[in-house]
Every structure is written in structure tokens, then in C-alpha cells.
Length: 182
Image (cartoon, rainbow, N blue to C red; front, top):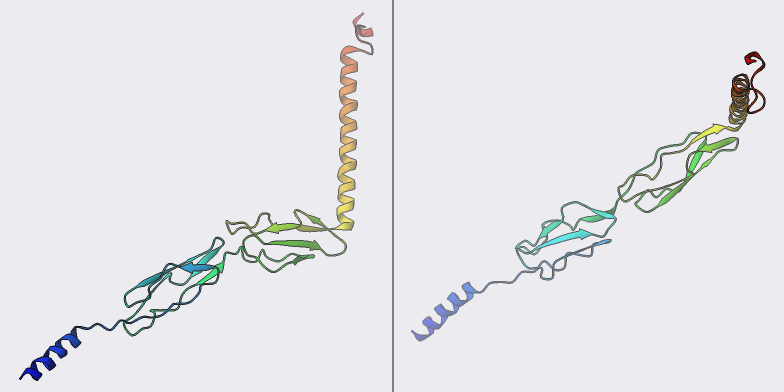
């Protein structure tokens, strides 16, 4: 009878023992990290990303009783401005559009770049400048020359008109009266 009591008592103790289940370390997050140190059943690990990166996926994973995580850890993806678009009569040098990176814009032979030749992806995930445009050299040279010529002519006409007005009003020499006033 004594043996039965010990055996019965052992079964009771055995039923009360809890098996400790661990899911193991969930893994390393490139360009980020996680807050967990214990990876036991019921524990939740929260992932976070470094400065210029954002979480792609759920930031929390939980350890299940079968020793597996509820899902894979999320990825930290670089924040990006996306493609700036395409340029006509030129090309873009650089294909990384992530925050902090710059691209250069160069025009094809026979064209002049109108705008900034370099764009940088800002932390706000927008480009620092708008894409430049390109003007064909032959037409742009003529247009610039024409505008400059018109400006000079208009300037001279303005000076002549003002000069005539002043001369008519005040005469040639300061202090002299006009001949029609005598």
C-alpha cells in the first residue's frame, strides 16, 4: 500500500510539471533590431528599423506553444523617393532612389540642360529638385540672342524717350530756360 501512495503522488507531481517551450531566437533584422531576450511561449518580440528604413510587414511576432513563431520577422526596407521619371533628350545617371542618395542628369549632345543637374532623395521621400528639361542648342541660342537684342533695343528706346522728355521739359543745360519760354 505504501508503494501505491508513492506512485500516485509521483503522477500528481508529474501532471503539475510544466514543459518549458522556447521558440529560439527569431533571427537578425538587417538595418534594424528587436527587443526580445527570452523567447518562451507567449512572449512577443517587437521589431524596429534604423533611421532611413521602414518596417515591411507586422512588427510583432509571438512564440507559440509548439515552439514556432507566429510569422517571420519583418524586413527593414530603405525609404525611397521612387523613380524621378524619365527625361527626354537626356539620361539619368544612378539607379538608387533611397533616402540620402543622389542622381545626376545629363543631356544628350546638342541640348542644354535647363534646371539642376543633380537631385537628392530627401528624408521626406521627395526629390530635392524637379527634373530638369532640355532645350535644343540651335533654337536656344537663337532665342537667347533674340531676347538679348530685343532687351537692348527696348532699353535704348526707353533711354531715348526719357532723354527726349527730359530735354523737352528742362532744356539742354540746367538752369536755362527753353527758347519757347522766353
